[in-house]
Length: 110
Image (cartoon, rainbow, N blue to C red; front, top):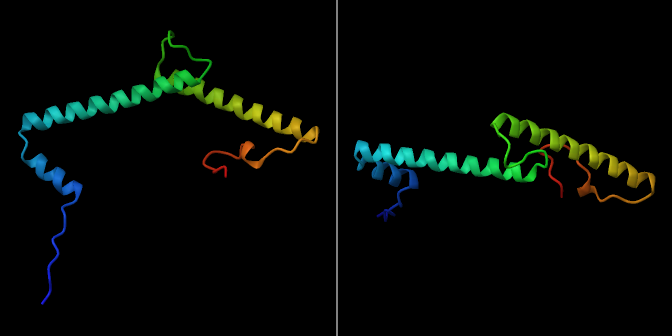
C-alpha cells in the first residue's frame, strides 16, 4: 500500500489562492503598489548609474536616453583607457594579469 506524501503548494499556487480571495479593489491596489515599487527600483538604479558616470550630474535634466547615452560613452572611454594602459604596460615589459584586460561584454573575468 502506497503512502501518499502531501506536497507543499508552490509559491505560485499560494499566490493564486491569495489572489483569488482578494476583491477587485484589493487586486488593483496591489497592482498599483507593485508597479510603484518597480518604478522606484528603476529610478534607484538610474540614480546609481548617474553617481557612477562623471559626465552626469545630479542637477542636470536627466532623461533616460541621456543617462544611457552618457553612460555608454563613459564605458567606451574606460575600455579605450584600459586598452591604452595594457599596451603601455606591455611596451614597458610590465606583466598584466589577465583579469585586468577587457575581453568584451558577457565574458567572465576569472
